[in-house]
Amino acid sequence: MAEPDKAAAGTPEEIAAAAAAAEALRPIIIVKKIIVEDGHAGAHGGAWKIALADMMTAMMAFFLLMWLLGASNEDKRKSVADYFRPTSHSQIAFGELAGSNGLFGGKSIIDPDGFPFTAKQTALLERLTPQAQGGPGESFGSSKEENNKDGPSDQDPGKATGSGSPGEGGGGGSPGQKQDKENFDKVEKEIKQKLSESPQFDKIKDQVSITREKDGLRIEVIDKADFAMYSSGGAEMGSKAAALMAEVTKTLKPLPNKLSIRGHTDSMGFAPDSMRNNWTLSTERADATRQFMQSQGIAGNRFSRIEGVADTNPKVPGNAADPRNRRVSITVLNQ
Image 1 (cartoon, rainbow, N blue to C red):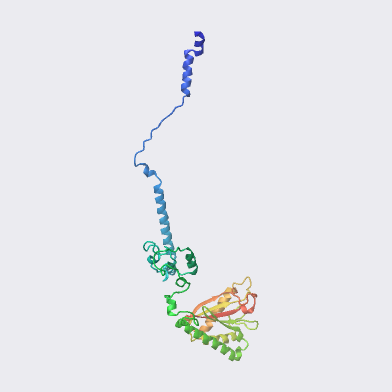
Image 2: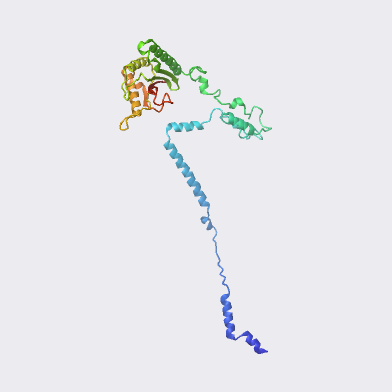
């Protein structure tokens, strides 16, 4: 019976070989011990990245502000400052209106009386403002329509001084506006009277148009089919137009107001190989009018602006080639 067991166990060499194979197949486990020193890992964290990002954002905002201040002129900076300057309606003691005035004091931390007057904003806040039971009396924290209505308040300097356009409420305007209104009425009356009384202007008196506009009094000499102020394609004033402009100049000469002259043309263009166009033509005619008026006694420093707009502003928009689109506009500017 011992022989089969010995055969089953194998020889010592076979047993040693099997043990060596089993040892070679055993997994190798390596244990590493990491020692972390106290206070050393903090330098490798991410907190410094947040601080750096905040600093870079602040620097970018600062340099952008400096660039905007340097790129804007004094008028723009003043406009921005005036925009953020509080008005008389917003200069209210919030301690009496907001909820910080004592326990349950005030009606709301965003009481509508503390905002600039505007009907839409007031209406919105009337619906959103909570109504507290405690706090000051009925006169505090309530958004009354008369306190927030659109328009100037009683403290508005414009209302106190009575400034306004001539002929409207508020004292009739400033002395300069009153004087301009009187001068413009006189100029319009004199020009119409001279044109109606002189026989030489009988056929062209309807070609003079006088209009009140926001910049002043505009006097236009308009061409028609049988009357042209200047020669075709040129800036030489005709005899009838010169006589007409002489009368207009006599009327405008005593005034202190500055003058603006604008030339207009129709859509008829020049030859393709020509160095001139309607822009140069309208400018030449406007300057020719200035030279004529200056030769008639108007000082050169009274001319504020000379410009030509070609055919971009026709009097008859439906027909760009209409002769009435050729005209010269003389605006007596407000003082």
